[in-house]
Length: 279
Image (tube, rainbow, N blue to C red; front, side):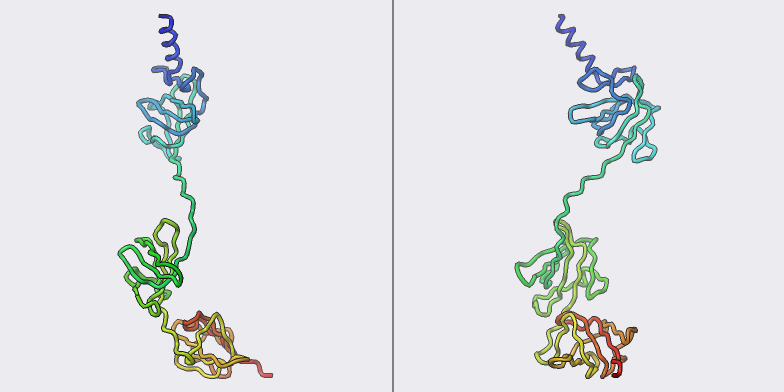
């Protein structure tokens, strides 16, 4: 009988909330909790809120209609408190909590993976994917979605503007900006021009300069200080500057000195020409 009474006393001492009095106690002990209780909400009951204060300690506090509740810094109700929120309660001994402030923690972002730029010739286009064949290695299929941004030949576009070309020499090429495990954030595609016949046009490689010897409808011929003359392709997208000022192809004249910038197999992106100072 004595053992049963002792067990009953221990159970009462471990009670989390003493009904009517509103006194809170730390689960697993008989000592009053601190004036401020902090932790993660693990349960919301009728007139009580339970906190996980530490891995081995839970605290349940009494609440009533006078308890002030704020969620995310805004006025709220007890019903707005949710399991998983981080919160703290202001409590005076023997009374329900006067205030509870809670917020939903931001989800932990997964570790960022590498951000490769996948490039290659487009071999297939699906409803939500684009397959690229790099110069080396196996084909890569990239996921796309409604948030993917497209550019074709430098202009804003849609997935429908991206075309497949099985002939890797003339097919549209593309670069995809991808984070591991996610659809591509951006697709940049362009249609490469066929390579010029040998001896006809010399593609610009980063930059070439020389004396302008001829200007055609879509080309400029330059004579470098050493070596053979180089004919550079130009098009409507080529940017011209003559003596440092914006110009057109018509402003470029034979006898000027000129530098052309571009990529292999592509028309020059920029042409900078100037009249040499007389000696």
